Amino acid sequence: MTISSSLNAGVAGLSANANRLATISDNIANSATYGYKRAVTDFHSMVISQGEGSYSAGGVRTTTQRLIDERGPLVTTDNSTDVAVRGRGMIPVTEASSIDADAGSPLLLATTGSFRTDREGYLTTTSGLVLMGWPANSDGTIPPFPRDTIEGLEPIRLNTTVFSGSPTTQLDLALNLPATATDVTSPDAGEVIETTVEYYDNLGKAERLSISYVPTVPAAGSSNEWTMIIEDSASGGAVVGEYTLTFDDTRALGGSMQSVAAVSGGAYDPATGSFSVNVAGGPVEITIGELGSANGITQLSGAYSPGAISRDGSPIGNMTSVEIDANGYVHAYADNGISRVIYQVPLVDVPNPNALLTKDHQSYQVTPDSGQFLLWDAGDGPTGDILGYAREESATDVAGELTDLIQTQRAYSSNAKVIQTVDEMLQETTNIKR
Image (cartoon, rainbow, N blue to C red; front, top):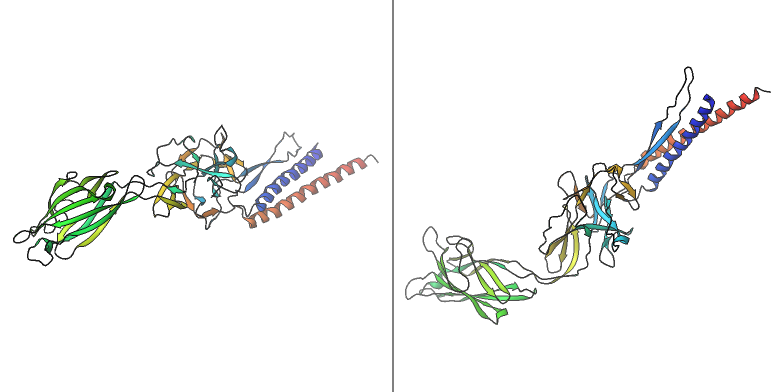
């Protein structure tokens, strides 16, 4: 019985070390595979019942595990949609073959991927994994989505090559009008100042507001008063607003606006320093500054000085590039200089990542043993952040694997020697009869 158990233990040892050799082989073979997580084989002794004064070898058995929570080193790339997770969490992906399936796109997880657009515009790896994210609203904001289901997640598709323009609704003017133009004794008295400001209509087409500043010249002295006339090119040059601007000349508030009176157009709001005019496409709010403020339109001695002119809205443009920032926002950039958030890639976290089911192409699937997943904004909660222009290398340490290979080879040879010894002892037992 004891000799037989020794034989069985030796056979179990061969099988166990063969399993360990398989994981070592897999690790070494994938030492250059991006995102690969190394597998390990653990040995467990088997203890069987034994009588007094005798011992029976129980042998050994093995369990294998993939260390998904171990991360490989990060390397930089030149592709903006190469991504890697720095820290805890995984990016949501799905299989390209399941995108059009009626059952929907199953959730898979990965820690890195080199994504490029396929012929249909999906961000896809060469192995067929498609990056998933939450779609943004037209203004670039991400609506609220549930965090414990994949509802709202969809394959990221860059199928729009043209950005639709957005209309201008806000215009800020900051400039200085020469105080000498309202002084009857000045050589430039009565000089009209004309300027043009571009804005975008509802179709993204550029239109113009022609703004004239007409000084009021009194019979004597200075009036410190100007008439602001606004004409809209989209309305055939019609006047859409006319305002009388009076400036302060006191020591404390000299040069700032004292009052604004509307001749036509929307009323001036002293709380916001703005008024609204109706251009052909709708209202545009124009901010010229609050009363008594040094910001906006001022009147100081010297020449006309245009300051800052800012507006919202944008013309149409062609998408030229896409980048993913550390918080998972997918930014699309156009040739007209504007950018827009079109998706957000969340990070998926599970309590026990090593219990995830390993799939092909360094992807993983949630299991009951891994625990319930939650979707986090990258950089929030327990999760790390997302790096663009980066890949995660294999977690395999080749030097360590080769060391384990030597140990495995020695252990395998030793177990084979045990079997050989048992065979010789059984032969001796057989020879007793002779």
